[in-house]
Amino acid sequence: MINFDVTILYQFGHFLLLLIILNFLLFKPVLKALDKRYNTLQGLTDGLEKAKSDTVDLEKGYDLAYVEKRKPILGSRDAMIVEANKEAVHVIEKARTELSEELARIKSGIEAEGKKVYDALMADVSKLSMEAAQKILRRSI
Image 1 (tube, helix red, strand yellow):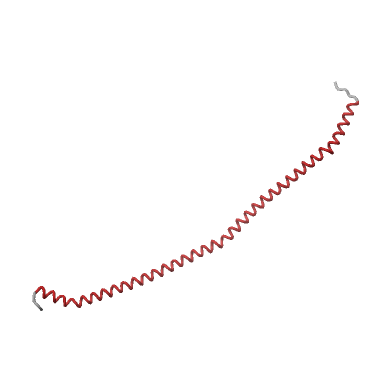
Image 2 (cartoon, rainbow, N blue to C red):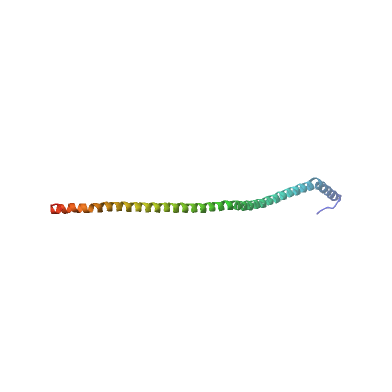
């Protein structure tokens, strides 16, 4: 059984005194340090979240700037390709024209040569036919 005497009051008084002393010397500084640590970590977490959102925003901005800067380059590239194709068509057409003119000149040259040969042969036909007839008949005509 428990005896209730004066020592219990002394123990209770010592306990309250120890609780008050520990409250000022231990509990409040530890709770203050824990609160400071929590606030620091919360600030770092908020900073990290802000940095992540800033990074996402910067990435979007970079992508948009990249696309915008690339548009004129692609447009000028396409324009250069179109211009090069036009120039190639022009060069091909010029070459075709020159080749057709050269072909016509060669054909007319061949026709002229053929006519010269034909005229030369026609001039010699009567002479050659006379010689052939003399050889066949074995007498002069």
